[in-house]
Amino acid sequence: MIMTATMLVDLDHLLAKPIFSASRCSIGYHPLHSYFAIGTFIVLAFYGKTRILAVGLLLHMLTDFIDRLWME
Figure 1 (cartoon, helix red, strand yellow):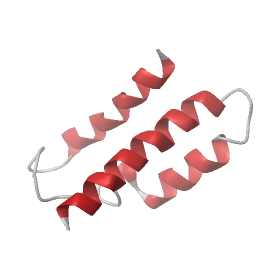
Figure 2 (cartoon, rainbow, N blue to C red):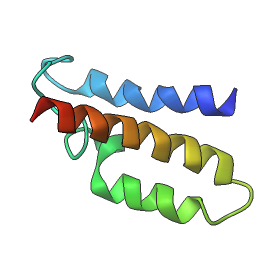
Figure 3 (cartoon, helix red, strand yellow):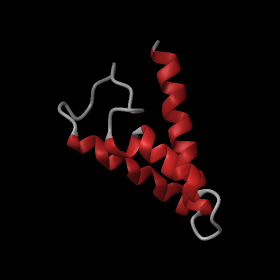
Figure 4 (cartoon, rainbow, N blue to C red):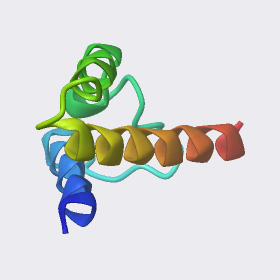
């Protein structure tokens, strides 16, 4: 359930105008998909209590990055 809950990170898409754009990459555009946030997720992966959440968030960023590769 924790890994599934990491999909809630996509709520930051609601802050963008337009909310959805097929040609826009999430990585680096949305606040919770920023490089700073990704760095924070990497650091959190080294702590026991936040490891599962951080790994889920990093896997989420990986799938968004794969989408980016497909768009180019």
